[in-house]
Image (cartoon, rainbow, N blue to C red):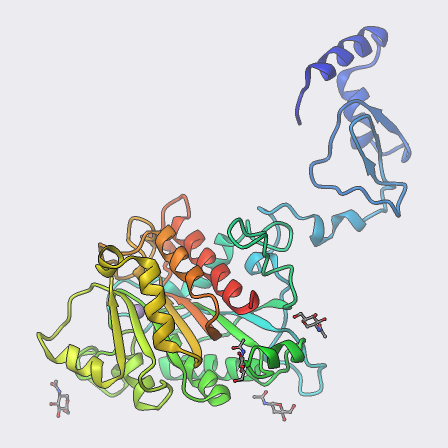
Length: 418
Ligand SMILES: *[C@@H]1O[C@H](CO)[C@@H](O)[C@H](O)[C@H]1NC(C)=O
Ligand SMILES: *[C@@H]1O[C@H](CO)[C@@H](O)[C@H](O)[C@H]1NC(C)=O
Ligand SMILES: *[C@@H]1O[C@H](CO)[C@@H](O)[C@H](O)[C@H]1NC(C)=O
Ligand SMILES: *[C@@H]1O[C@H](CO)[C@@H](O)[C@H](O)[C@H]1NC(C)=O
Ligand SMILES: [Mn+2]
């Protein structure tokens, strides 16, 4: 509450005129003691979150006078009045929908874009913790939402307040005890979402996306992208994959995973090898962006990566050619194809995103990556994910989870702003 000098002067005169009444009685008494429902309070009391409601005389908050609502009045206590730091965390305060695991005869939900969590981290080679990624990213998104995410760079565009209906489908249940089961659970959850119909079918046709809702997945370690790609491939056919990562992730499973069992072969460094093997990748249109981690084998990793069909932009290209030129190359490379962006948070420099399992110095600043994503406007983005967010390694200032949430906000802009 702002104490203006006018307030202090009026307070002084009010108190001297009414010496028997205490400050608390006069300014707060009726709010805290509801004996008199219609009591009025004089003074500069402002309720920071209540909205003026012209349809209800009971709730009018303004500078001079407050009418206390009836104790049974509740319509200002709904989610629309929630402060940005409060509420049960759906991504960006989006409505939370049950999108899979529905009764067969339940009414099918409808939306254009779904956020879904993939809490899984038993496919990692180094530090774990990405099973808490979905919770962390949702927490990092609390200052975004319909109430005030009007872009400073895109003429006030707000992805939460435009033609698309965006919802949060919660997390797919993924068992921590058997990766084969867990990855299949995620695949079936995605499949159930892809089986629904978008709310705005005419817009979907205009955008050439199909009437299946588009999905943005919150990882989870990078293995989860395999399940997401499988379901997207079944709806869309082979996809141009833009892979933001400091690592290649096309490693031969005989190299990464120890070659100890076939079970060990599918993990967060080999899923792109398998995506290629299964035909999910559109030949000639896939590209890594931000590479800098060392290879395991002197030459063969590079050869194998080429066999999997990827072009490369390295982290050093940020300085060598700049992010605008990088974005142009990516757009040329994917052309008119349907694009899936998979975004390993470790592509961002550890100074800006320490909360991840396998940090590699020398990456994008948050500003550079957001500029690059802006420059991709016009691609046909049908699905995306942000993976490897491990909140236990984040700072108290939440820098990794807020960066991850901002990247997803950029994906929504690419999907909806066209
Ligand atoms: C997809 O939808 C059809 C028709 O509504 C239904 O028969 C089928 O079981 C659904 N599949 C999934 C995976 O939800
Ligand atoms: C679909 O989106 C367009 C904006 O692109 C809008 O004009 C139209 O009213 C929407 N249709 C439905 C059914 O929501
Ligand atoms: C959709 O496809 C049509 C025909 O191929 C093309 O003319 C149009 O530009 C495409 N729209 C978008 C948004 O990519
Ligand atoms: C992996 O294991 C198979 C089967 O035991 C073996 O043939 C192959 O040479 C191994 N690969 C490597 C790189 O050790
Ligand atoms: Mn990765």
